[in-house]
Amino acid sequence: MRIPGRPAVLLASAAVLAALGGCTVQPTDADGKRGLPVQAQAPGGPGAGPARPAPAATPTRPAVAPAAPAPRVLWSRGDSGPRVRELQARLRQVGWLPVGPTGSYGELTERAVRGFQGKRGLPRTGAADAVTWQRLVAMTRPPGPSDLYPMAGRPAAAPDPRCLTGRVLCIDKTSRTLRWMVDGRTLSTMAVRFGAQYTPTREGVFRVYWKSRHHVSTLYDSPMPYAMFFSGGQAVHYSYDFAARGYAGGSHGCVNVRDETAIAQLFAQVRVGDKVVVSR
Picture 1 (spheres, rainbow, N blue to C red):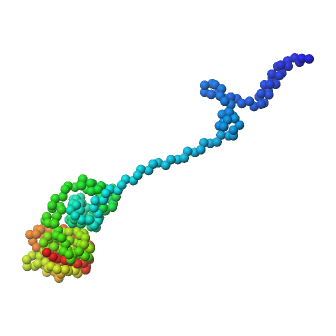
Picture 2: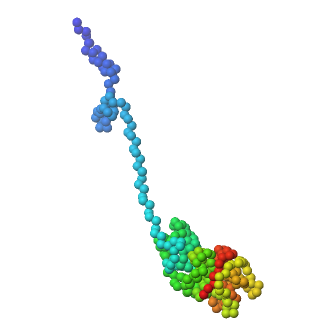
Picture 3: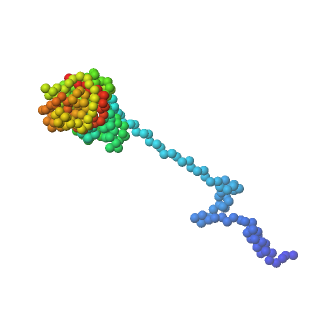
């Protein structure tokens, strides 16, 4: 026997079963087309587990540029010669070297180069490298004879053999120069004058036995700043007369210096007991 309306009941039951069966709604893409079911879009295909996160990217280190090579050193402490003398003359032009050129690269030159380098942002090595030299040349003019040899155009004479050891005030009457030397190295050189005909400066080997910064001669009532006595009343000292008149005058036997800055620095370095050699 047929039951009226059975096909309609069957259709309704099928719709209910489909809803309870959990059928997945297919998403629609941006173009309105049907895409894959959600489960089917998981990596690994249907039945695969949850998606795994992608591995983190390994950070890359930035490339390090190779360090620039250090500039070539042209001259450094212990060197000597005409090019060192030119270096010193140029340093003197820009106010970094207070004494005249000696041709020997000593402590004062090293200190001057270090100061020049630091002022201009260069490595403070104290050695005259190619970069330092180029910067100095750009700031100065070529030195003339009076710059290279400030003692009235005379180069300092070769030091007496007795000056080559220890701490020595090496004084040469022929070239009219004083070298301040330590263990054979010339640290500074300056122009000097000597006693007049009837009050000559004694020659020989002596020792500094007394230093007097503000000395005044009791015999001649004249100032003798930075006096370093080496033989009786004879001393190396600054002379206002020498600074004013040059070699037109003479001393009463002392060794006169006319560069006050130079002798002030010399006075600070010389010790009682240091050797004095006066030769011609």
